[in-house]
Image (tube, rainbow over all chains, first blue to last red; front, side, top):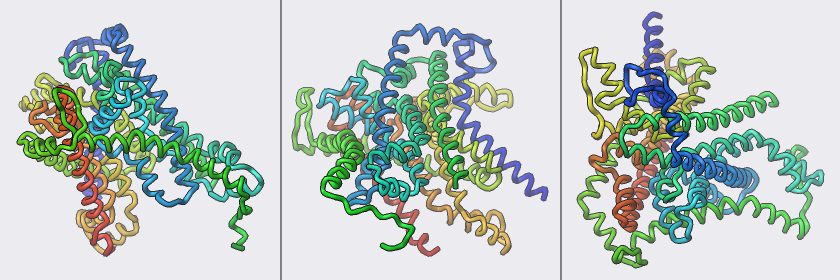
Length: 267
Length: 298
């Protein structure tokens, strides 16, 4: 028994170490964003908000943040609609070439973003979209829609197809059925995908880096700052960016968790 | 059909049929058109561009193989290809090995509530500013950084992994570990408990159970996890630049350089297409390995 207990403890300790490796960069960014010293190391140099003051006074960072927010909101709206539509089509219809249909919609996240970035740049340069926020949004929707589709599809798996058929039989049009039954049922997943696709866009740096031109988003600004010397301002931006994307991802997960639990109770 | 449980819809009239078609098109077409226009077409355009030429700094539509011949014969490309492939493969292996004990603990030892919380946590970094995390990792490993500050009193170090392949691999692990732990945990969670208990009852030791019962039955998920690690590392740009110091360059660095400073898009496109082909081959091979002959035997 003792051997088994100590083996258990060792494994749990090891797991904790893996989590430390994964989360230390995030935690230390937040911690050092409040550090008075220029160089982030031990010992701690005292509490200070100067790096936050510096980034809030920096016009290029403000512009980057504004651009990122615009692109994220637009991406989230479009990608969630497209993702819902594709998930509904997958749920509702059987047709020739469905595998190809689903693959085309779902595949973009498996293509390295550096390649998506070059492809977007060369293509958008031809149609006059490169260098615009629209151009960045277009690329982000391609990348984010599959996440929305996956979230809504998982939710739809719990909706009995006969419910829709029953509504049609009682005289409801497909439009009335989808707005009265399907969309309300999918709301937790729809809101979750609103948040998650916004997070995907808000953190995306590679497509944005290739396409953005002078209209830098915040992650592209960060990438440019990384090329310079060590600057504690990056920690302050990083802490802000973490706060935004974590809020979005956690909100998405809580919505999904709640939806799932409620569903379990219904069953 | 006559059974009472299935609900039948009345036969549709012609106008009802048209309206149904409109309904289907309203939902079905937008995702398809969007991904065709902004995903499939750009990738096709990328392939076409590999045959274009650059004449006095201007892109000109062409049907030349010059870019392919130049890139495939270039020593810098071959070296970068071998280096990138090798590092991505090493990362897939390391991430799988490092993750496994943790995934095992999460799947079999921890309480379900703890496991749910940890899974919840692991999803977060996947969507959380990767460049900032790499910057932070850079600070950790810098000569005056935290790691060296911690190990110096123990009489160790200073260690230097920055601007070396080791630094790149550390960055790849930052990128891939959360996802690999997540996928492995799901894979192990699906191994039937009865199978493991049966192995124990029949006197199979702990390690032998892992190697001969758990790993084979979780094989598909474990291979998928490793494949994702390979794909992510193979295409990553940030870790090799900021932790590896671009020395030597990876394929993604070649692409970025050709586009950003070299301004030679056709050559960058050749590198990109070679990367896509490589990834398709690797994914196909890994899926064959996952669902292959041995799997059918069980």
